[in-house]
Length: 218
Length: 260
Image 1 (tube, rainbow over the protein chains, first blue to last red):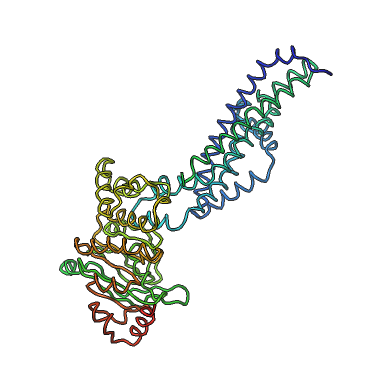
Image 2 (cartoon, rainbow over the protein chains, first blue to last red):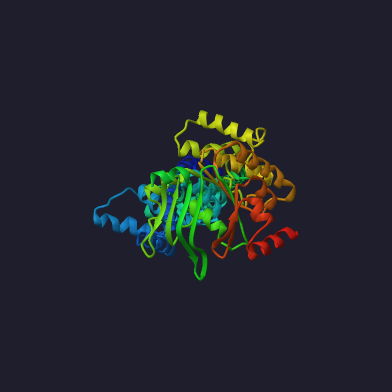
């Protein structure tokens, strides 16, 4: 099989459409992972009886089971309980929840890195709990973990391809549809690889820059 | 009781504190008058820093009553569960400020943001007003040219002066100074002591400091308290405690400290 330029160009618009779905789904899932992970991390850090243990189990459970199994469970089992969501929404939620267990651990390491003296200074200034977290602890915690979070963002972008298996109409799914109807996989799958790389490489560079800009010594 | 409030700013009544087997405060009774400048001296581990940390609510006593300016800060009955942050404690705590040995500035904020943070967040002051006052305070500690510098760009002495301005921004009635020059290079100690000296002579703030700077303690204190093994073993005017101590352990401590 030789590369067919004309065919490649003809399928490019559809594949770019799939890439756009992949990017949107990844972004939405990142928002879920960041928000949910933060809630889980703070509750675990506060050592609230029962609740902290429940969230500890949540992290172990989500991390200990494959993303694909979680996606299948959400896609095939939830409708039996009356929860019917589109493949796109299901995929976004599964990816976001899955990665929230990783971001929670990253946040936790960031929070634990903030020195005891910072908490004591906040107490000495009578800062209430909320501003102590939002203005003193978390801004410092987030700065130190941006590189780790950034790596997870790129990993989420790549892992979103798994969601093609629950019929989410993202990049890989589009390529497979083209491949099976045209009986040509070389061009669509090659372009998929190139498109993934074309996004993830610049993203990695941007994250490195963000890391430098956020450094406390800047 | 209300009569007492006028002549006592800080009061410890029967305060006990242990860390495991280490009894750091033993039935401590200790009082400080309004506007009084008191220095606490003693070997490390003698419980002197614990006094400051209990006042700042960074530690809780195992037992005893602590009041500040007539208001209750701690009232702990042994064995009963401590509600770490009662409403009364939070209100009383606002009358107290503290400067730490390690400065503990907020590293992600500039000097002026460090000073503005609590007035804006706690007192609800407008940003403009807080900025104006913070500028005045940083000017007072000689840092008017470093308003927008983050802590990592400042020397240890400069950082500690920002920390003093930050504590002063809450207009405390009581200022606690916990070995504030111990982490500084020798050549930077003077600039910090000068700022504290200015505060001591120009304000009627009550000041309680733990220090190893004996000459400085002698110069600015109304009273020096020698701590040993969880109790105040000797106290009085600085010239008496530091020049003519009566207690043998005070004598030995001063001898050891003044050796080098």
